[in-house]
Amino acid sequence: MIRAGALEKGMAILIKGEPFVVVEREFVKPGKGSAFVRAKLKNPTSGQVLRETMKTQDQVEEIVVEDKDSQYLYADDTSYHFMDLETYEQFEIPAKTFPEYRELMKEGDTYTLIMWEDRPLDIKLPFKIVYTVTKAEDAIKGDTVTGATKVVEVETGLKVKVPIFIKEGERIMVNTETKEYVERVNQ
Image 1 (cartoon, rainbow, N blue to C red):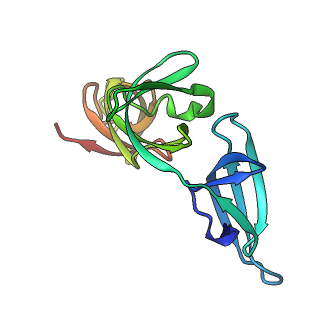
Image 2 (image 1 turned 90 degrees about the vertical axis):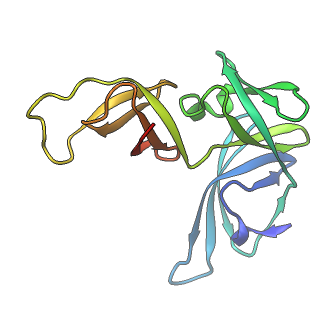
Image 3 (image 1 turned 180 degrees about the vertical axis):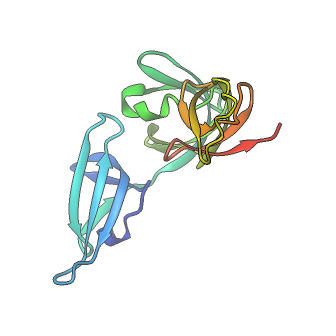
């Protein structure tokens, strides 16, 4: 058991016998009264999302999870397919649980899965990932306004707003939390 004030993003807790992952956490200290925590929790099995407000001294049950490095193989209409790098066992994670990851994960890359009782609870993406631009319109001569941007598509299908000098075939770094362009990566 831990105090609600100690909750952090990515932690796994048990509510009514079901595992939930802390997706967002906000600590609030009002001018009057005791501090509290607003948390957005997601059940990775059912996809259910809860918004909970707890006093910082309330007790919640943290569950013991393990990190497992797994290779992302591919996605189909219903699932993401992974392979355990130690046992070579393949398993599926329902795509409806993490729909926002479909355009972020690259086939063949290794990601850390948060596992509880042999069930994947979450997929840890790196903060920044390098992608290859597959579709980009050419910049128009004279279009040199400071801060001018255009939208390009990367190899996973993700659309990103980038500066106009980015061309097809170039590699760019993208922040996986905000899905925003960070920088151009030299080959």
